[in-house]
Image: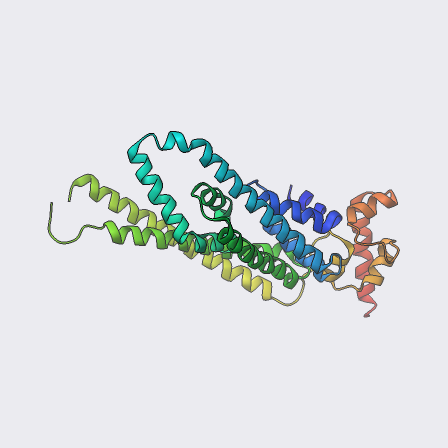
Length: 199
Length: 112
């Protein structure tokens, strides 16, 4: 299946890459990272042009993120009346929305490239929580630019060994993800671990 | 501290330990793949249909003109994947791959 996607990049170049990054930002199961690596390697071997590849990947990713954000907004608009029927839900909702609006920018930025598996869901959350469009878009563009540069750059450096580069990137991403989860769990435990005397 | 509360704490601690184990595993794999990457020597990636010719050249360190001659492709034909070259020439992909691999070995033996 991956071979089919790689052939797509080899045959259709930047256009296919833009489509793939768009779909991956909507959480569709396309191997976008692998294809970015391939595109980088094809730039290094002279089969594709760097400018159009980077531009297409970035445009596709940003468009996909905007779509996810719009979907989140639409979903919230549909559900809002129901959500606000209960005072408890309203309180929780407003706190969550406030939290996202005030501190969501960094999460949006990091979920583009450092924890990219979370990206599509952060889009929905940001839209649903009413994060303002301008800061959201700024973080999107900056974060996706890092992601594009990172993976295409890695593919470029990989030269003729895409599979080895993909292994490297996959293990690094796995390491980061598990460290992030561990940090979150450690923080949680620290917060709720019983202190002082007994019951 | 109530008993159920304690259980939750230990469960979380257990999951934390597992997560750290996973992180360690990824770290080891990362180290191994980094080592494998930095190894000089044979980096010839086995030929597959999706590979464009230029990519093959880079992987096997063969100049593009030589490879184009081997594959029977005109220069300036743009990027062509091995699959599409095989189809254009009306031969099986495996035939083309064997052809290219053999020709590359011959070319290397000439000591260019």
